[in-house]
Length: 258
View 1 (cartoon, helix red, strand yellow):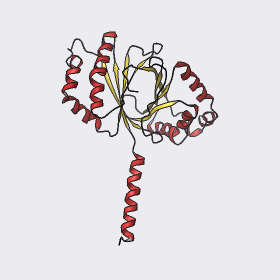
View 2: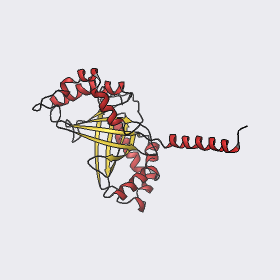
View 3: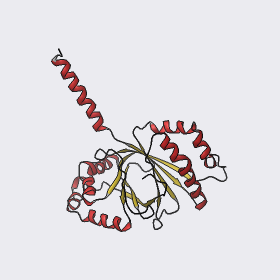
View 4: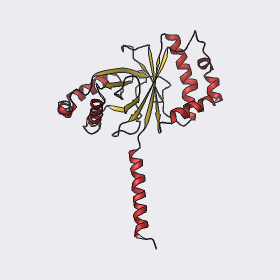
């Protein structure tokens, strides 16, 4: 006969395991390639499409996003963003080790990998590591009927003057209800994340998506005019939580999984 202590122990274990599952949050790595011209852009495209993304797929990461600023964006022609979803932080190092042992990757990416010092395929690479927000712990991949060349994926970075103020902005998204307002107006968020390693800390980053530019403008107008936002933005607890905003309006590349 099973004792009451045994049953209690099993129940406690199940509750503990469920809490771990509920608490699980994705990590994201955003690789930002800075390029100077069309030649470098073509080189990065070839590498990502033929070597890097196939290698990540092989390693178990099925949805990798690749985005470029639209023609009207100030960063047009100078940046390529690669969004890599991860289940564990140590996957970053594990993936690099796998790539170095992947013969197909090394062969397909040889032009990029073996580039000469006086003809590099890029100017610099920045790596940003994020942890998903509690209120949106996993990546979302939207689907649109419009061509990728029309779709808009808006990447934003909100910096805080101090760590305390930055944490209040994160709270504003989670407990304050900012994420819920984005949901109410129909902005399809791909992710929200706390930056745990990057060049602009303390900051958070997030990406919303739209079928086209007209939809982007309409959804942002709806957000700014939403009664919940008009109340939330005036709360004293959340005043001065953002000291600087960077944003990039992007199209996904034709080979992007997102």
